[in-house]
Amino acid sequence: MWLQLLFVLLAIIVGARVGGIGLGVFGGLGLAVLTFVFGLEPTTPPIDVMLMIVAVIAAAGCMQAAGGLDLMVKWAEKILRRHPQRITLLSPLVTYLFTFFAGTGHVAYSVLPVIAEVARETGIRPERPMGIAVIASQQAITASPISAATVALLSMLAGYDITLFDILKISIPCTLV
Image 1 (cartoon, one colour):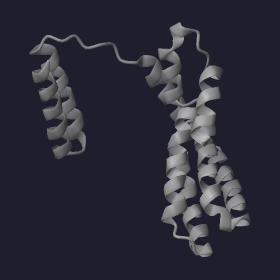
Image 2: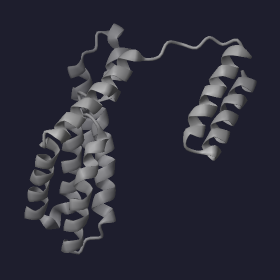
Image 3: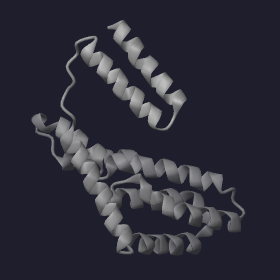
Image 4: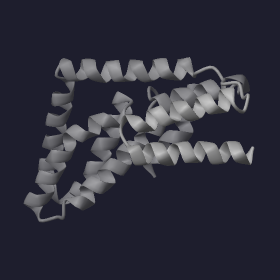
């Protein structure tokens, strides 16, 4: 077992040093060695989670194509420009809501230039509201009912009579505090 762990770590380190596609190539090489040399049987891929990720990305793409993301950025800009002194408090709330409703943290990138601009105009160092905004966006992933993380947790807890509402009534308050 220690030899297997050592080999996996070696494959990850070499792949990371090669960079780019090398990480995937060495990951596949590591899996091949574990399967054919050490005789381990690979498990089935998590198809449900993979399909949920595809659905969330497709929904975010549709929202972008339909102009919904631009509308959300416009609303966020109005809120942030109306209360520029509160940018450090409002920017994480805005990115949290973006991610919560979209299910992916990538939508928060579109509001970061607005946060930086409003912060600079107000005389606040932009890295403060932007840093906390990115963290809040990542926290919202665990609270979003349509994120892959929440769906994966729900599928893992399926046999324990735990519903999506049970997960959300814990994760939403925990990620906001």
